[in-house]
Image (cartoon, rainbow, N blue to C red):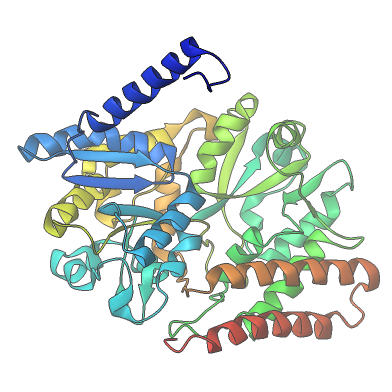
Length: 443
């Protein structure tokens, strides 16, 4: 004690702190482990599930369910690490569509999620759900996730300004029609026909899907440099670059709010979930906004696409997969819960037989008294398939790089040599993805 530099009192206090810490560690009250644990990355999902869980627990005496909201990137990194290191994992997990493919690496038997293919067919979900929505959660013909949504896409627009400019939206049947009008009414720096980014590919890929293109085909082969991708890039880049561009992008937050309020953008690519975001971010234009189907690539072709999505899967560590399946059915397909959830989020559920609920036909004052749900439901069965791969994140990054390169070229040289440049950029990006795939013996 004489050697302790701060005196006996301080030493006594240090000893007491150490002893009390040890006591609390050894006598920590044990928390009962829930029967099922669910991770979700979306706060709105988690809050809705926490409201729905009591009814499920009441119907299953002795069962407890814990819903945890975990940041999106943390879900993927923590869960992948837990799968690989044989650590404790939750029973059910929601994964964002862009990350889902990363879990399907390696032999089928080593994937951390249960194969749900037989359950889906035996339960009738295959017939009830828009089948295109199973594709992003399928690997080598086996389905590992249940879709949370459909996310059909429409165009939101400032109805009052569009009418004032004499634009008849019924005549905007194709993208050629749309671009022609856009070049007439766009005033660079003051007003643009549509909001489209030139540095990332989220909207580009939505238009790529509309044409039945994508990053991968059903067999997992990289197709991001095929003729569909080339034609999509040749249509998209002149909308966002060059002297005749009709689009701009300012990012999100307050600047986006101001841009919509001021009529800087007339049209916005709007999946169902984004319609709710617009309501929240730009409340002052309530009653002056409306929705219309996307222009088609050609007369009579598809007038929607899809943007975003979520799956829920059961992990292989789940001790009671039958009970976990019942919980999925309760959270994802309970008619009344989903109707109220639609009122709160504008997200259309994936099962077609749920769309006849009155909630989907309610007229929304914000959207010029249009029946929001019915409009999206009419387009939902036609959403395109999109196929995934463990390399989907790499492919998306390389597509964004190709887009940036094509925009830079077009701003400098215009149409001169543009076709060849687009093909070269897409081929280079696709080859980098294929090179990574070739290193994987299981794909």
